[in-house]
Every structure is written in structure tokens, then in C-alpha cells.
Image 1 (cartoon, rainbow, N blue to C red):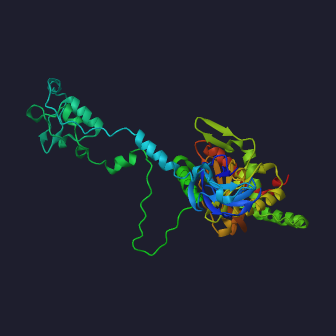
Image 2 (tube, one colour):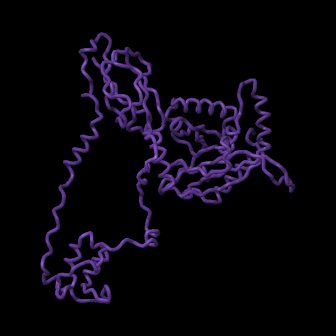
Image 3 (cartoon, helix red, strand yellow):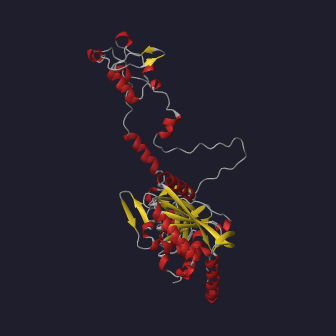
Amino acid sequence: MPIAIKMPALSPTMEEGTLAKWLVKVGDKVSSGDIMAEIETDKATMEFEAVDEGTIAHIQVDEGTENVAVGTVIATLAEEGEDVSEVEPQGGGDAAPAPAAKEEKAEEAAPAPSPSPAPKASPSPTAVSEDIEAGPAPVKDGERIIASPLARRIAEQKGVDLANVKGSGPNGRIVKADVEGAQPAAAAPASTAAEKEMAPAVEQKPAAAQDFGIPHEVEKLSGMRKTIARRLTESKQQVPHIYLTVDIRLDALLKLRSELNAALEPQEIKLSVNDMLIKALAKSLEMVPECNVQFAGDTMLKFNRADISVAVSIPHGLITPIVKDAGTKAMSRISTEMKDLAARAKDGKLAPEEYQGGTASLSNMGMFGIKQFEAVINPPQGMIMAIGAGEKRPHVVDDALQIATVMSATGSFDHRAIDGADGAQLMKVFKELCEAPLGLVA
């Protein structure tokens, strides 16, 4: 019996993905465990393994197809003994048109457009009874605009400029029916710059791209790049960031790193400064638990361990593999885990649980010579530590000016969940751990 091969859910939150590449073709035999395709999610490109044995009879979704819903039949597998030429595609073919079908249903279900407004009726006795003036009337070009109190109130609520409304009441008086039937052209003038500045912020669409005749190429965004753009935009719009920076003397940490690497050489383990900073951040979060939190509307999550997401640059984007419970792990283990996670991240082979989650993040741009920067919080986390380059600087040591290796670190904190004083305490502890690093191995 033919087997329908469906779009897999490669993470708990995955709803759709891009069928990036087929690694098999019609007529190929596959066994359980064979890699059949590469699926691109919003986080990574992952391999899709065969579960059953058989021969590929039909490929129903072409490679490069985007927005393929989880559960869509993407291919049909003929079981052993079946004639491939006689096998019918399973699942009714490609399910990709489903969204269009939904749109058609939505159109059918949509309410019919409302009829055009009826022509203005002549003023009724009720409308005439409104024409009792109360308070000063509007003035235009030195002439008083005659309008009933009710008409003025409705105009104010609707934002209609009475100067552009023709009255149908006695002596041209503006009544309720005139304001209710006012066309958009009668809308009040645009708000002043000051009023616009004070108005609540609304979501703005990106400015339309313009090439201005400059030679260029159009590059299609990957699912990962779209997700990065969406999440970081949401973070800056919705999360009130507070930034706190400290300068850290690194000489003691670099000396300890050299000594530990000499001791670990027989095990072929080489610690990086980043490995030690991961440990320092995790320990800091354990010592200042007020910063190891997550804002959740009318509640707050307080975590009992520090899982550190570490920013890793990969082709077409950025991913944050997680060192779980980093505060309790030896730096040698953190180093081993990070090398493995970073290598598999660049190959697109991380499992979802290895990059989804984390209680805080660390982003290090020191290797590029960046002195200092302010990182964007990775929602829904409550903070991220931005690490700059360690460099020789004039520095006061024991009340004397000396040359020291100094690094700037900037913490970005979600001010909804973390007060400035708590953030400052975390930065203080982080600095102390880095400057007296024996606490990292105790």
C-alpha cells in the first residue's frame, strides 16, 4: 500500500516550512534513516529522514516551495513489491493550494459591502428642535458658523471640520443629519507635528524599497532572516530596554585561561575567553536571581537555573544555541559543548531544543574589534550581555595609572521585569567574577 510522506513538524512550534532541497528523486529506493530532504524552518535548515522503506513514486512538492504547512503530503512512497508506475499520488496531490481555498471561503463568508449612504433628508421636526445654540459657535473667516449643539458634538467626535459642511437647516444651520452624512473631504485638517508626536505609537510599515536606478540584485529573504527581522522589530517596539555598561580588567582572567589551557592540553581542550564569560554570566544570574527572569504580562517567571543562549553567526542569519545549566558546569565542559553546538549550528543540524529557550543571552563581537555595543534582547528573555573587544588601555590600578587589558560589557535589560538597581548589581557581580576569576573554578 502506498505511503504518504508528509511535511514534518521539526519543532514544537513549527506550523510551516520551506522544502529547501530534495536529496532523492522519483525511482530512488530509500531505507529507514536515509536523508530524503532538507527542510528550512524559521530557525535552521534541518535534514528530513525516511521512516519507512520503499521507492519514491511521486514528488508532490517541488524543492524551493515556501510556506508548506505541516502535514501536507510532499511525496508518495511505493512499498516493496508495488509497481511504481501504478501507484497513485497520496493525499490528493500537493496540499499547497489550501491557503487559496481558505481565502475563497473567507471571501464567501465575508459580509456584503454596506449600501451607499442614503441622500440627505430634509430636516425633520426633530432635527429642527436641535437648533438651540449653547455656548459660542465656530467661526470661519470672521463669519459665525451656525450649528446645533448636537451637530457640534458629533462633529467633534467624528473629527469633522464644520467649516467644510453645508447646513440644511433654517438659514443654513448645520444639523445632525448634515454631520452624520459628511464625506471624508470634510474631515478635520491633519494633526500638527506636536499632536502627532504625542499620539500613541502605531505599527509602521517598512518604507518601500527604491533602487534609484542603481545597479543591484534582488535577494530573496530566507525564513530565518524574516524571523530575525520580525522578532527583533517586536523586541525594540514592545520591550523597554535599559542599557548598563561596565569596563572590566581582563588580565587576571587571561592569565587563568593560559594556565587552565596548559593543564587541559592533554585532553585536547582549549578554553576561549567566551567560554569563561558564559560561565561568568551564568554564575552572575545565580547570584542575582532578580535578573534571571522573564516578563509574562501580569506574571513573571523566575528561573532556578541559568541557561545561556550564545549568539552564533551562520550563513544567512544568526542562531543562539543554548548551554543549559551553565552555572554548574566546568568551563572545560562548556568549551566542549560550545564547539559541538557551534559546528552543528553552522551545518544546520541543531535539534529544536538546542536553540529554543534559554534564560539569558550572550553576544560577543570582540573578535571583530568592536569596542562596545548594545544588543537587542532576544524575546521572551529578560536580558542579553554584549561583549566588546579586550584591548590595551590606560587604567587605574592600585591608585596608579597603568596599561591594562580592558573590555567593555553592556547589559540590555527588559525594564518591565528588571529594575535598574538589579541590573546594576548583576553587572557589578559579572565584573567581579571576571576580574577575580578563581570564583569561576571554585
